[in-house]
Image (tube, rainbow, N blue to C red; front, side, top):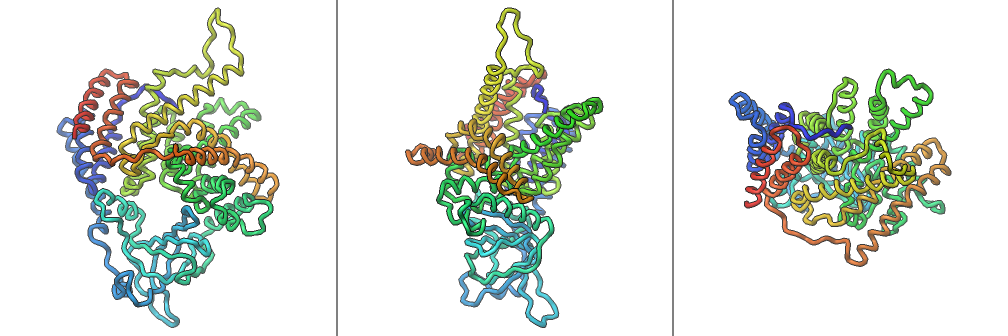
Length: 575
């Protein structure tokens, strides 16, 4: 991916941002209006009457779309007759037995399951001619200590009374209901163990059966060799064991299944600013890039003439698409991974057409693909974090290239009197520079997203330098080793798969030991800070964009726009 000097956004990209601001205003009117004013202040091209009317129309269209999609939150859907007669969770009447088709199954920490059920209705009685009307919208079922793991497409029945999805009485957390509304979920139930008599019927979708088969193959190899229990039982019974927790990281990285991780482990990852490494995102699509690169290099050894038709970058992008799509299916397509896959697809299409584009262009194109299909995805926390982190990286890279230039691809010509550098020393210096860039990028992300992280989680990440050690280990050792172990376990090569996975688990064990040591000495927990005012987030965004313009902007109006962003950011900080 090219990293040229920072360039202004195209008109169509700014139009997308106006649309997003309108959707945001449907839930947060003041914040959305502030975003619109920021865009008008930053881009002088929209100060003409025609462009201003275009921006107003886009904002109005986004607002109307968001208002329409958020309609069930303002006026909840009516309850069907069979549920309207059973109000309240504490009623003495027995709960109705409901049945629904599992649409999505997600493993949560401490062995819990989150199951999205569609077409939820009472269990039909024997001899009944007509089925009752289903619930308007889907239902989310949180199941602690589950007795089985349903597959997507199977029918699940349980004796529970659905209640509307509602968060706490906190006006700043209305996006919780919006995130569920984006997925069409308006009801919820909860159960533990075999309470409610859950039952299962049906075979499930073929893709869900295949994914579950691969997951069980990985768990079979991950379980201790001397364990005679089932794979899931052997891993789930030892959530307090550090070795088992290290093994449980592999299913979380490959399948997004965190059911074998303990809450304490995730809290340590979050306190160390490493929780993003467990979320399936573009960082993990580096595995697809490595697979594509090795495939192209191998093919070029056999047929060097392929470089006469396309450049190596084009071949690598094309070869990375199949493993990326496979990983998207394997991880069940979370929002952050979908964003990364869309970026890869857009970049591949542009390379085939001979167009040059930056990472910010690909990010906005992927965001357009997502929010135009599902506008309420803007309120998804994982998508918000993913887009903001990638945007910060794209804004910081041009300035970092100017302050910390990289050597040319072919290697810089040595000085006339300088002694030639040894290959080992050159590679060591390149590795140190790469680690230094990871540290600088992590620092920029923590600083730029500080108000957002404080507003959502309440604590700043002070141990972000651990990303320098952990991220290369994940991308180069843990994730490739887990994928190779799964590839060996699927055809039944358990001995080879177990040997590969033992090597992939070693960095996980070292990290967990380090985090446990830091927590034991009271160094892991960061200070608890007050949540900032909502104006702090656009203020930091304005100051960050100003620094990016000063560092990487080369067009004539870059400094003038940077001064405007600085003035706007300082004005908002005074609020």
